[in-house]
Length: 281
Image (tube, rainbow, N blue to C red; front, side, top):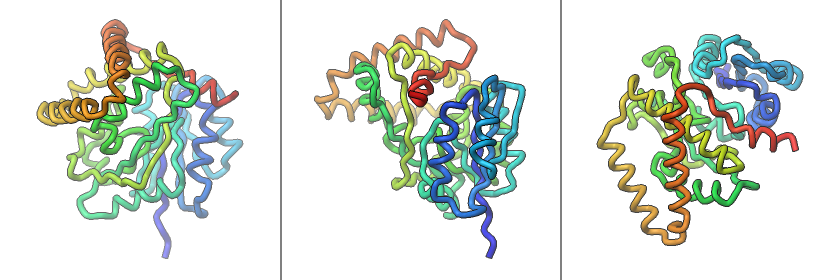
C-alpha cells in the first residue's frame, strides 16, 4: 500500500544560518518518501537556496523575487501534491515523530488543523526577556496549544480558505478562519522556538505582532467574547502564582513599548537577528 507523503512547506527569507538545522531535525528519522518538503525562498539575497540544495537533494526549492511570507506559502501550497500539509517556519525545531503526530491528528473526523505546544528557548537571553516570556507563556493562546510556527492543516480546509492575503499575521489569520472545534491540540507534540536575546529586539519583534493583529481586523476580526475570556483566564493564572508577580512590570513595559512602536512603524518585517547570529557561534 502506497502512503501519501506529508507535504511540508517552509517559507524562508534570508535563512541560510538556520535552515539546515531546521530540516535536519524534521527529517532525521524520516522514512524514504515520507516527506515532500518544499522550501520557498522569498526575496532572499543570501544563500538560503544554495545551502538547502547542497544539504538536501530530496528537498524542493522554489525561489520568488518577492519578499512575502504569504506569497511563499501560497506558492508552496500550489506546488504540493499531498492532502496532508504542514506549515513550518524556517527557524523552528520539530522532530520527525512530532510532525507525524500532527498529520495523524488530521485523520480524525471533523479535524481541519492540528497544533502542538511551543517550547521557548531563552538560553543566553537577557533577564528581562526571560521575565517577559515567563508571563507570556501563561496566556491561554500559548498554554492551550500554539497555532503558529509548526502546524498541520488539511487540503480541504485550505481549499475553503483560498489563497492567503498579503498580511503579516499569517498564522493567526488561518487560526481565525478555522472554527476552534475543528482544531485538534496534540498534547504530545512540542516544537522549539528561539526568542530574542535582548530587550530591544524583543520590543521590535513584538511590535510586528501588534501591527499584524491590527491589520488582521480587516480580514478576520476577533470574537470579542473569546478575547475577554482568554484575558480573564490569563490574569487569574498570573494572580495565582506569586513567584511571577515580579515579572509583571517587565511584561507590561515590553507590551507598552512594542504597541507604541507598532503605531509609529507602519511597514517592514522586524526580524530577530540575535537568534540567527547565535546559530553561527
